[in-house]
Structure formats: C-alpha cells, structure tokens
Image 1 (cartoon, rainbow, N blue to C red):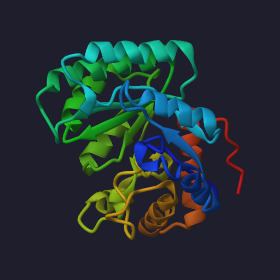
Image 2: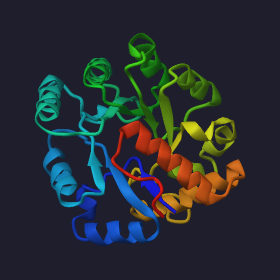
Image 3: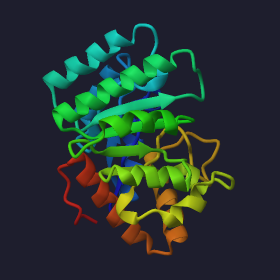
Image 4: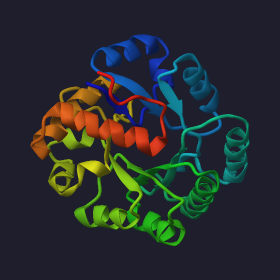
Amino acid sequence: MLLVDSHSHIFAEDFDYDREVVLDRAAQAGVKYHVLPNIDSTSVPRLLETADRYSQCFPLMGLHPTSVNRNFSKELEVVGSYLSIRKFWGIGEIGIDLYWDKTFVEEQKVAFRHQVQLAKKLGLPVAIHARNSFQEIFSILDEEADSTLSGVFHSFTGTLEDYRHILDYQTFMVGIGGVVTFKNGGVDRVLPHINIEKIVLETDSPYLSPAPARGKRNESFNLTFIAQRVAGILEMPVHEVASLTSANAIKLFNLPINNEES
C-alpha cells in the first residue's frame, strides 16, 4: 500500500530531534512521500534543507496567510525569488485565515490573489488554507480560476455547499486530514458526498493529530488512521482509498512517483 501525505510540515522544529526516524516510521506503514508547503521566509531554510536531504519530500513555495502583515510585499518578493531559482512542486501554503486574527484581512486577500496569479503564470498548483474564510476565498477564485489553475483546499472542513462550489472550479481537490476522525468535526457528514477522485489525504503534521493520536504531535504515520476512517465512511477497501488518493496527489502536484509501488 502506497500513501502520499499531501500536506506535511516535517521540516518544522518539532521534528529536529527525530525527523529521519519519523520518516522511516511513516515509510514502514506505506506513507512514502510527503508534500511540504512553506510558511514564510523564516521557514525556507528548513524547508529546503529537508527537501534536499530527503528525496521523498517535495517542497512548495508560498506565504501562509497568518504570516501576512504590513511587510507582506517583501515576503512575496522572497516567494518570487525562490520560484525563479529552483524547482518547486506547487505554490503554498496560501489562502485566508480569519480565525486567529483579522487585522490584516485586506492584505491577506491581496497576497492570496497575487500568489494565485503567480501559480497561473508558472503552471503550478496551489495549496489553499481556508479557515473561516471560504466566502472570501471564493470571491477571489471566482474571478481568477480558469483552466490554467489547479489546486487543493487543504484540511477541508467546509459544508456540502462549499464543496459544490469547489467543484465548479473543476480542477480543484479537497484535502482530508485528521478532522475526519473527530467526533464533532463535521467532515464525516460531508465526505459521503465527495467523489474519491477529488480527494487527497494529508496530516498537516505536526498539527491536527487524528484519533487515536489526538493531543500528541502529529506525524505522517498517522495518515494510516485517516485512510482507514475515510475507507470506513466511503465503504471502500483501505488499499483502494490509498491507491486512488495517492494517484490524485501525484497527478495534482505532478510528482515523479510510480503509483504502482507497494
């Protein structure tokens, strides 16, 4: 069984003392590949060091919405600079976050639109962070989305109506993570209506640990719990969920992976 963790921050400081052990533990469980979204300029050195050291890790480049502040234009310059000098597999993690702080909401919108346009120009998919902000993101994507733009709504926690809106973009997927295992997460009620061809699996490690690992640092091994829960809800064999969602991630990010591995 092959699984792709389509959203992991394995480069974070949380893994400095056991990163290789964590990657090996994941690989033993079938989670052999990892997509790594950036946060901001301060995380780039760790991101690139991890990606250069571990060939199973594929970096994205972008500015996370919670890192947007008055100086966000300088951060966007950093994003553009790195995209011009080396290979990245997508633009992310980008989006709008209205949960933590609304001080720079207008700046977040500008930064999000800029990075969406950059993705279109470069032909790269986007990894979208949408927390309490689906309508704000939709208002921008309704104007920007076209056949040149693809991506994923990472850690999807929206309603069925939100999912149907995402379907209108045709080339977007939804990332299903640990929240699907939460008793009151709500994702389990929407998931039966989501086409498996539109799903990628993710951990968002070290955050959002699924049951039975809640309260602990999340890691890619836990993707197996997420896959099992998705399989149970969709009434599909877990190996089939693994195969299909991995193929979706490979296609979305154009990863050089043979999905026939086991």
